[in-house]
Length: 262
Length: 257
Ligand code: HEM
Image (cartoon, rainbow over all chains, first blue to last red; front, side, top):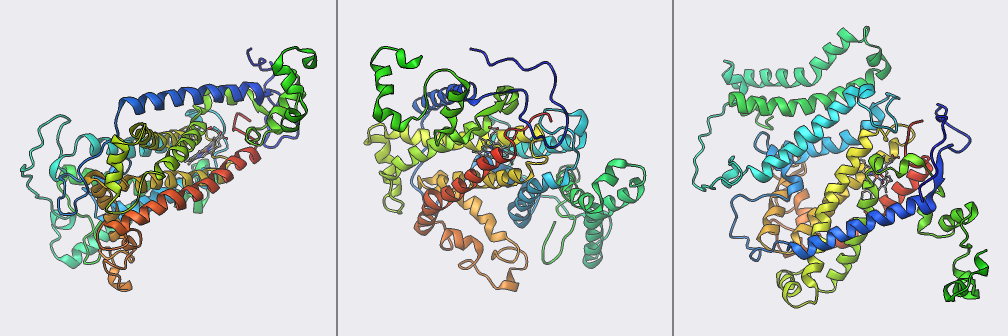
């Protein structure tokens, strides 16, 4: 029994509607039977999986025997991977906090009324590309690297490559200020702070000054939403920039202070 | 008419007792279709009518529903596991072996709990992905997205607290890595920036709040067990109730206006 076909005329546009949608069908049987089918398929899959593959159980917990590498559960490996590039206070605490808060504020930042309730890229290019980049390009990629390409000492190994626990990797990285010729520590702190704060706040501020009058999208967003969006967006970009600086130029910290390093 | 049908099933359905439980007829009429949903407390999670596109697997991927199903599977398998598992340093690991070798279907039970937990983390991510791609966090569903992010965090915390319970090398060191980050919390962690302002040490910082001491030990096991079996599931259930209720109140599944 196929659900009754949808009517020819599309639903009228409008934010709030008084009358029911014209294209409705009964939940019983059309929705309930579909849920039943999906639930059955999922249960069958789980049963086969549980019969075929045993959950791991290693030796009893032993606080005196540290495995190398020690890996967090796979869904946190993205954060553990970032420990390579950032200190723990950032990679393990501040960044996850920013991811959670950043996700929560999305609905209040994205005021674009288009693309509500259907798949679409053209009407929301910035939102969709940013989300895809963050989710697939950073979160999922970092998990894949952490799961499959990290071995003893958290060094990089190709999947399947022999894990040499005695592999020596020279640590040659230096902080950014000395690298660009500022060797005095206090001057270096100032340079580092200027770079970090300039990146996080200066660039968005400049962009706003230059583009506000020309872009209806920016004006629609308003100063406060723009500021919050820019902060989260630049922070995400900053993570990428820092990874690039480390891999490309062996930069340890951009901002090094006695209290915290970034 | 349904009442004219012969056979024991029809007779049962016409009986006084049956009718006191199920208050709708079985004839395929619009009224009965609506009553099947609205007179059943569980099915009543659904509206009596849904928009046609909401049925398409291509639209929702059914990921919210599958996530909920996996949560229910975890509750059932988890409660059965609780009959066999004791969260103490002496017994926890032995009870894992006991499940594997002595308890009838114990290994399958444990496997199902574990694999379902992994699957739920994946489906909750996919659900969020779908909701983003269809722009379903836009008005009037902004707040339900926020509730969803809460559920996302709780799902991962549920998985993480459960990871310690087998009390083997894998679980102990994974949780060591995870909780060590807590000691780097600014101000509140003993190795974090500005820790000296609050004067916290390894026994009194936020990490110790969850691990119950300087090291991952039996105290941690007990804390994670209570968090895993009682605290987080209750909070997650409450949030799920809010989440489902809001889906209904926000006009059902999103769709083109
Ligand atoms: C334990 C975790 C969760 C459960 C059990 C759950 C369950 C559901 C269900 C059953 C629906 C109905 C539509 C569908 O199946 O897709 C739904 C819709 C929705 N969920 Fe979730 N969800 C969870 C987590 C999340 C997360 C992590 C988010 C986002 C961050 C989220 C945001 C939403 C929104 C905005 C809707 C409305 C979608 C629409 O109207 O198209 N949920 N959820």
